[in-house]
Image 1 (cartoon, rainbow, N blue to C red):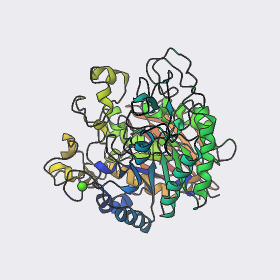
Image 2 (cartoon, rainbow, N blue to C red):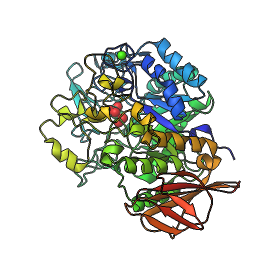
Image 3 (cartoon, protein in one colour):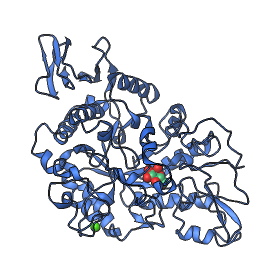
Image 4 (tube, helix red, strand yellow):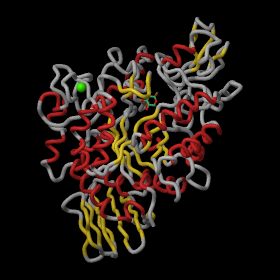
Length: 535
Ligand code: GLC
Ligand code: CA
């Protein structure tokens, strides 16, 4: 059996602005990523996903693009981008870019032209209406914005400076797919697709039905008292997934990872019904709100196995540039983080890790009023603790602080007097250099398990079976491909526990006390084992 590479790979997300600053201006850049490629290669991730670094006014730090074919000067040049693709490939790794197809910046020449009048060549490239309907944006409140030049309103799914393109206009779709082709022809291995599920809106702009739901949820991400029936997960978006897949297929097997949200049985449709002929992967964001309990993960795994059976593949993600970091959720407990990554890297799925997650970086709570992220300004009158209680990250600056490389000033991220966001003060202890030197560190755990994953086909391609009859605090499962079978046992409890288990060869233990002997497994609190059976 051999699965396509995009179903067996491991993904590391880089937020370019915060990864490594090569020229001392306080902002991470593409040459900086280039300088850290060996770090990533040695760590063992196979695919890098870069958040956007294209020309942009940077009001939403690159998720507002003004030219898809050039690079924002603070990040480098087109040649830097080409060089990064080449150097990633030279190390046997892959690189995927972030495609923001849904919207452009309001400074993109297409929009500047579109807004000038009702009759210009780009007049229909965006969604213009004489009157707003009742739809809410993903950030809350009406997503319609008035433009006096046309005496009309345009639609923006996210923030007002990010107008949505009109994909019912074939010229728009063609132009965007040409951009996709441009990057594919330059060797990019695929794309993460920004808010792919809002790309199509109801052709008649029917009002959304009202629904009693104040807080946005994964199922209904716009929340705020309405069901996003007519501006989310339209059948046309599922079709676009297939069209995009065909464009990618012109260039060989490429990874497409959709940022989508909605009910699981709906977001699955982006992959295709019976065959995987749509996007190759989708995020399933419910797990970003995980609870650290064996039961929670037993159910999550069972649900994802049911929702993404072969030829589909789930994605396991616990942090990203929009949401609370996993280590913050774990209250800084490195033992828990080591257990969680062991799970993430050994279940049946593509793991996706966010820069700094491998060393357990935590959120830095920064004030709303001075936020660089535009989102908190929308909510500056609501006290921060309200969002904390609801578990919502509003100031995304908190999770985008510079990568903590070592204990030198600015955590070794930059030689500038000021970095674009402050460095988390815990960098003196939480950093790459310190963890490289510590065999039991989170970083070395990630490295060791990634190496196991490369060495054992069952971890990459095998089926997964949850194990029954274990103590309640222990989560166990096997991975199997032909003769090779691995068992993974994880003790989510703080107490040591022992139970009968067939003897095999121990490949990895989370703590020195974890052991398998004479037909019994013994796991320390928050301990775990990876056991090998068969050839
Ligand atoms: C996605 C991105 C987020 C961005 C938004 C608008 O949710 O992950 O960072 O602000 O889309 O593009
Ligand atoms: Ca720089």
